[in-house]
Amino acid sequence: MVGPLPPQIGGVEFFVEALLHSPLRRRFPIRHLDISKPRSRQHSQFASPSGYARSFHRNLKLTLYSFAYSICHFMRYLFIIPRRNIAIVHLHTSSYMSFWEKCLYLHVAKLFGVKVVLHVHGSSFDQFIVASKPWIRRIILRNLRRCDCVVALSATWYHFFTTYLPSDQVAQVENGIDLSIYKTVKTTPAPYPLVAFLGEICRRKGVYDLLPALHKVFLELPEARCLFIGPGEIEQARQQAGELGISAKIEFAGRLYGEEKAARLAGAWCLVLPSYAEVLPLVLLEGYAAGLPVVSTTVGGIPDVVTEGVNGFLIRPGDGEALAASILRLLKNPLLRQNMAVSNRRAAWEQFDIDICAQKVGDIYARLLA
Image 1 (cartoon, rainbow, N blue to C red):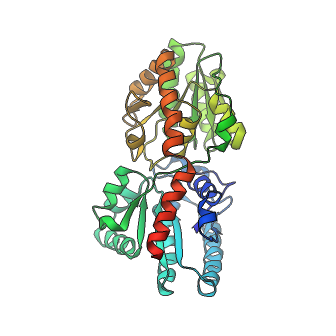
Image 2 (spheres, rainbow, N blue to C red; image 1 turned 180 degrees about the horizontal axis):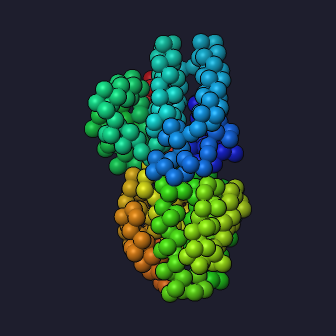
Image 3 (cartoon, rainbow, N blue to C red; image 1 turned 90 degrees about the vertical axis):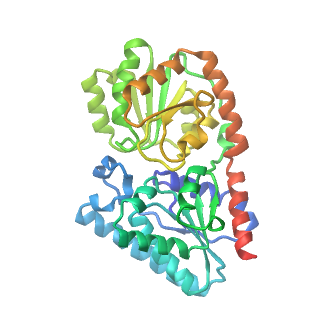
């Protein structure tokens, strides 16, 4: 299995870590190659609607630093593949440079007759294909077709990939999270209306739409507050909050992990993620596990897991008025929040437990081995 691990912050990192601690590793002997690139991110990349994958936003020094890490990881991979009894290579990829790197891993695996599973996490993978020049698109699709299985994270992404690949080459496996820390956490809401945001503080996650929307919320509910959990452009967001006059009502908690993160989430009244691009964000699943109704956007696989009015509300990306109205609707309606909380916690345990995800991934392995 080739993929990054924490302490880097990102959905892929936490998903790979959870998968490696799941029953999958008891069902199959797995060797993991950690391809993390510490300190290889810079603030300007947070402004990109495509996130970190757009490596051409990096300066030369950072690009060389990342490239050196890539070479080291790939050399380790070259040492492993011919010398080990490897039957399957499971690649976790995003779009753009992450994908092109994984193509090298793909071709080496094929050179040694190894099956390849490509697990696609890139929130802009559709744009990566559609917006590319025709000759680049042909190369992308040629590489995808060399994979024995391409994993899509939701029904929407499954349909996207099956427009280019045979349906038997694509598998739908929703993300999963480790629910153990949420089994004992107390779901006691704060004594005041508390909105939570979990993720990168950046444009792609809709932070600069959320802050003006919160200004409207605070005008109507002066006692309300907002908690931001995650790294990123914290100073820029804090500056905008100051310009809006809402700094006193906002807490930037930075990176939180494990039980501390779960406990802070459980104190919120709702979770907000007004993203511009997503696949199937783990933060929504964490919100479900914490018993939170959600407000998010109609992008990527989010509509596959958020049913309007049942476990949250969906808006168009960038629609600040609808964002504020949806937040206010949840904060003002305790019965609605309670019903959504029950629905979401049930969904977390019935659909998004990492053990369920591990079973599906294991079935893919078994099929390829057969």
